[in-house]
Amino acid sequence: HDPGHSYKGYLAGIFTGALVNGRKWTGSWAGQILSSLAWVQTALHAGYARGDTMRHMHRAVHRAYADSPHNVLGTVKAVHGLSYLLPARKCAVVEALQAWLVKNASWEGDRYTSWAPRGHAALRAYDTVWNRDWEALQNLKAQCCPGAGCVCVSPR
Image (cartoon, rainbow, N blue to C red; front, side, top):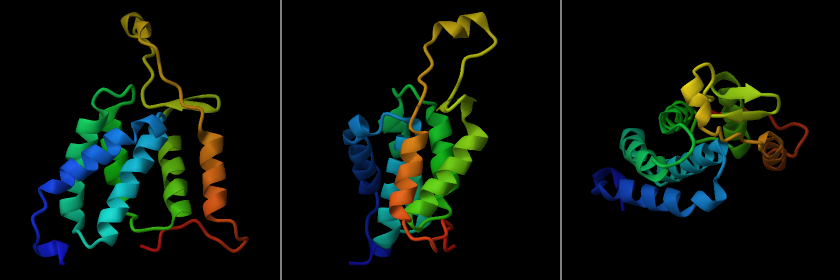
């Protein structure tokens, strides 16, 4: 069965269902991004074209995370930007995500968020959801890349 010649309209539904059903395990912003990237990688390994995959993932991220406390547009940007290194080893994906978070997340000490309502008094009424999973990301990367000779880079 060649995915290139098959109907692809169901991909958004599969992605949306998978992301929504996985939300209880992906409370952090990094978790949501990694979950989305895992499904992109799965589709690419199955032979779906990058354009088709990303078009349907874009819809799925909006549907699955629209009510998330994390910035859904930031999630879309992360998934699209990081998807270009796929397919890749898990450690390379986590390494790239960490670099992306350092650059694009709002940081306060060792915690980060997708947005921080600073400056305007009316925005301070919103509770910022801070993520404290940086150490978990470090551990995940180490588990995926245990060898001393492992280099966490994408083969692309």
